[in-house]
Image (tube, rainbow over all chains, first blue to last red; front, side, top):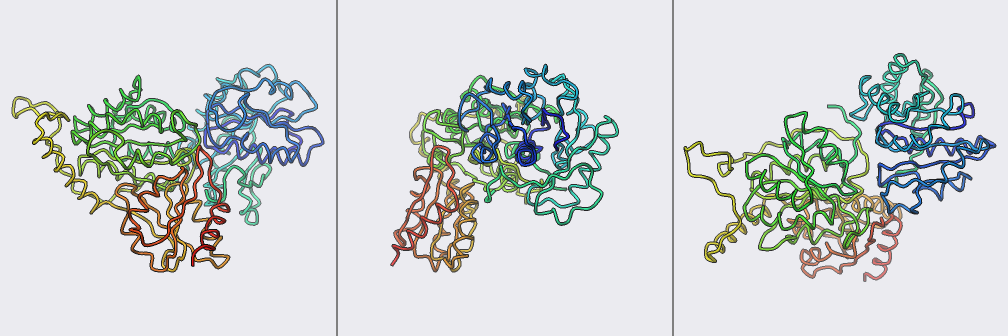
Length: 224
Length: 352
């Protein structure tokens, strides 16, 4: 995790679990890293379930949460705060960019492409093979191509985030892994992480690709 | 079919297409935008059409026209947009046309906010427009139920020639859950002999209309509609009883709120408090009968994401038998299981 490049961009299909991954990843990063951590919520697509909703929790981990000029969860205005530039320009910061879904959501990134220099950034594509649009190799490739076109930035790694929330099984994760392996072969990019719901951690087999990131469902209330 | 993970708005759109919906007319509003977006992408693939109208008023009148041809049509919006559609819904009810209208509701009144709310209960159950009419209103609590009820809504609409509302608060539209698409139980649906599909010179033209200037004729029409509503009340009322057999405190809640209440019930039962839930699945017709099936109940506690609307129907159904209490959050605030539990304890403390 500390070996990932300083700027981590998390992209993917909407509903793939980018935000849950980003929030879990940022917390882990804040625990492991000695540098400052900023989480920028660039989501201009979703009105609900955005990482900014969890700013109070994230600040307890000393994570600097950046999002909109409009405070709180009551707005769907596509406004992103200029504050996002600060950690991008300040090399003392580890940055996680939680990007809105699809190529439409990734449009916000075009503003920052000058900071996405090779070796300085990673762009991770979150894949959930249980989402209808990204169940096939073609679906995922199409998706990555659209996002790369919009952002003019190359994806550098894959995250297998295949799940069915609390109903996730190890089979789901392995199914997603097969899909990610195919994508990995075609595009020649590694599977960097496999996220696994923490309740399944005892059953994790040995053949998981990439680093395992145990996921606590922070964005989802117990009654959901 | 294996389960897939979908967002509520998408799942409702996919269910509509599964049910044979060919035409969608709508106008964007948060938090239901993924639904028209999904339809705009998917309907052309099956030879259907998606039209973004210039307003909600235009969209509902396109539904009026589309339904008149006998095609399966749907529109969706959120609270203020549904309010704008009420005139058209009244016309559709008057003209006896089948269609499905989805309301992914948000806080009000007026423009309100974009967070989830259940403050459209009155609008959904009292006939939001003018005149003597009712429409069936389904309130799913899970995405699977949203899928199943949306599919069924098209059949029910055709069977009774009536608009059917599917209402989910914003949370149902925005949350994600695993879903699968199953065939609904087959209904015997009448042929649409009333549809305006062209006479080909072989029959008298069908006329779709809600104007009747002769009062005797209009009264006859109202009686006919009323008989239809009585039939719907008799056949289509639906509800879930959750742990009510021995429950001393019985919650009444629907949609997202009912999910939270179920968590409260588990917590209360762990403390030895016998709690249960009546969950209306149809808001109209309201499940009055459920309130005669709670033998151990000492009090009712209605929980809503509003300042108290369904509680009026609870009072009607209760017929004065039990004390009725209320707990609500509004404006887009979601109650927590704990705060509902505290209210239940307060209520039980006062029950003698």
